[in-house]
Length: 130
Image (cartoon, rainbow, N blue to C red; front, side):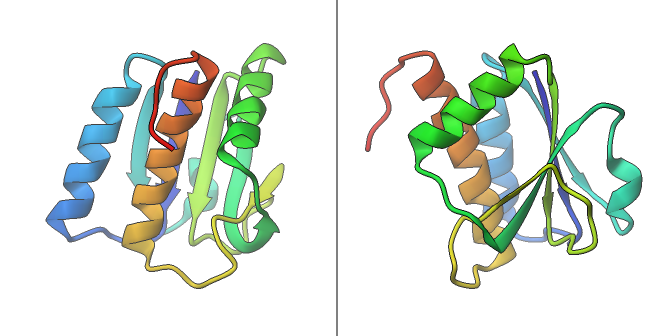
């Protein structure tokens, strides 16, 4: 499976870049993850990609349910997932909320990477702290 995370803002903080690099390394055992910063995010949607938009008004899921959704996408033939952060005008197959609260984009990005990693650990019945 290939997951593209598209962000409309430029990340400048080293701790965020380090977190992205660490989670990308961890996730390489399960899938390919690509991070893209784009001013025009609509151009970044790959053909036949399942599009998830992160929005505080979207559906909130448990980690287990999120893992189940990712596993189901893979089984149903959706091998490309595109996740958008900060792109309000994107047509999405699914709108996901991390929190109803406003969250700094840097923290939000780290949370998304962590939850994707957690999802794959759950899918593979691997230990992961709760």
